[in-house]
Structures are given as structure tokens and as C-alpha cells.
Image (tube, rainbow, N blue to C red; front, top):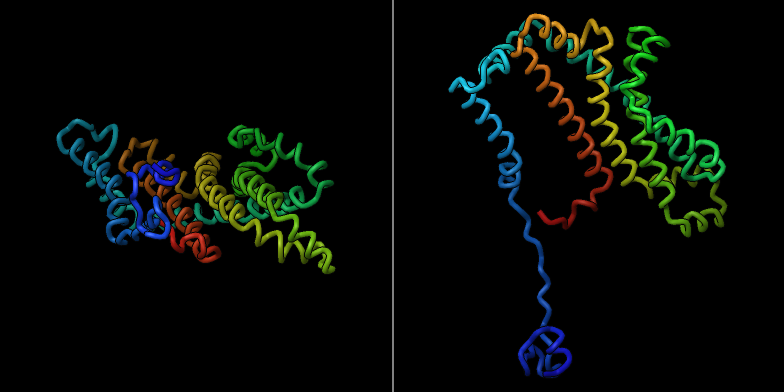
Length: 288
């Protein structure tokens, strides 16, 4: 058996080309795109199975309504809160808090990440302190923020901002450091200034890392929102939950939990859309 045939595991004399004995014509495996409807159906399969199990457990009495309301009771509570306007007002307040905190936190993390990633002096001055602060659980800062900022909106927004700044900082700093240094030096040799270099070369090169950091920050903003609305809140989804807890309304509690989950899914969906718009090449030719 010839060496090429032995390496490919072919019988002696197997060849697709008479001029090249022992070799076969390569057959590249091209992934076929999966139908959109099938992909959506597979994604919905898990949530639908959970919903069916919840309905069956409630209908058979295995799951008591005092522990968790049935899907029908939750739907009725949703209608009650929506028609009365309570849910719409609470949702508006909560989204404003999460949006403001995310905007401040992600912006601060982006600026600090670019500074520490692009400048050695900035890294030496700032990175060690920021890494130390990053290890502090943001929930442990709630009592301190209440002392500093009181129990108003400022403490809630600052808490969300702190929680969302560090994922963006870590992603931005890593993305900037991984920018092609040869390209940076080439642009410098053409006389490009530092600000133009960051805007035209560094940020576009770090775009995948920046979007990953934004996605993490958006998800964490919802988690921080839940904690922030525990600070003596008088409006928002957290206030509805506190009121429902006092009256043991598990149906309203479940509605609020599902609303938090939907906000998280919405944030993740927005991040995915931004990735497709800003980096369309990542989805072209991908296996489905």
C-alpha cells in the first residue's frame, strides 16, 4: 500500500485521479442551512415543556396555589394589573432605572477599558484598583449606597451603573489590547493622532469584545434592577412584588418574575440585533 493510501485509510490502488494513484477527490462537508421555522420550534420546545408541566401540576393538585399560582390565575392577574394601569406604570419606571444605570455604567466601563487597554500608563494607574473593585459583590454595596445617596432613585441608578460597568470594562480592555499592533503602528506612521487612532482603528478592531461586554452588561442590569428595587421602592416592578408578598398573592409575584425574565430576554435580543447589524459577517455562512 502506498504512503498516501495508507495515510487516508484507502485500499491499495484506490484513486479518483489516474494521474495521482492513491489519492481521492476531497469532498468538503458543507453545512446546510436549517429552516427558520425548525430553528424557532426547537427554541420554543423547552419553554413550552415547562409551561405544560406547570399546567399539569397545577391542574392535578400536585402544585398548590398557595405555593405557586396556576397559569390561568397568573394570566388573570396579568389582565388585572394591565387594565388597571399598574403594570404599565411599574414597567415604565423599572425600564427607566435599568436604562439609565446601563447607560452610565457601560459608558464608564468603555472609557476606562479603552484607557487601560490602549495606554500602558493608564493600565498601571487604574487597572489594579478597578480589578480590586470588580471583586466586590455589588449587592454588598446596597447598605453603603443607602447611607451615601439615601433611598431615592439615585442609589438605585448608581447600583445598576456599578454592576454594569465592570463587564464592559473587562471586555473593552481585553478587546483593545488584542487589536493588531502592526496596524496601529502603521496608522501612526501615517501621522494619525491618538484620538483618531482610537476612533478609526482600535474601537472597530475591538468591536466583537465590546458587543460581548455590552451583552453581559445588559443582562446584569436586570439582575441589578431586582436588587435596586428592594431599596424601599415605592414604584416599579419591585414595589408590585413587595405589595404582593404582603398579601401572599403568588399570582402577582409570578407575573412580576415573568416580567423580569421578559426584560432580560428583551435585553439579550437587542444585543443580538446589534451584533447582526454591526458585524454581519459573523452570521454569514454559519452553520444552522
